[in-house]
Image (cartoon, rainbow, N blue to C red):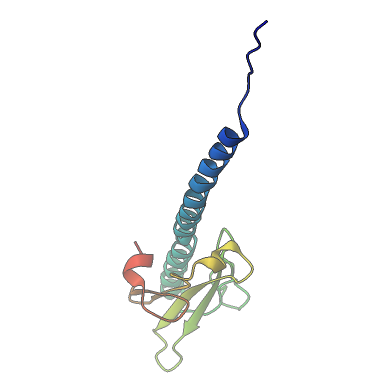
Length: 147
């Protein structure tokens, strides 16, 4: 009688496990980087929404406002202080001596996954439409982040 063995050897199994581990170690960081870049649109969309709201407020009331939520007597912008997907904190700063100037900013929240995006930590836009972005150390990253 002749018996044939079926199945895989331990060496074959370990080879497959090593190959899968190598592929995963390459794919996971690449995918994570892709997600961070894709979620940056949350900040840019929110800032463009603020910019649009500020222009509407200027036309209606003759001045810009620093009230995103609408808690003041002039109604504010009726927006939230957090971006739509919740990854960024939003803020508007008025230049008080020059009432016609403002800067809207979106900063990555420290309790969300976007906190790992050190390359584009803060986005800003001003009344002239000038866009700016910086990394977590304060270095200009505008061309990389606002694309």
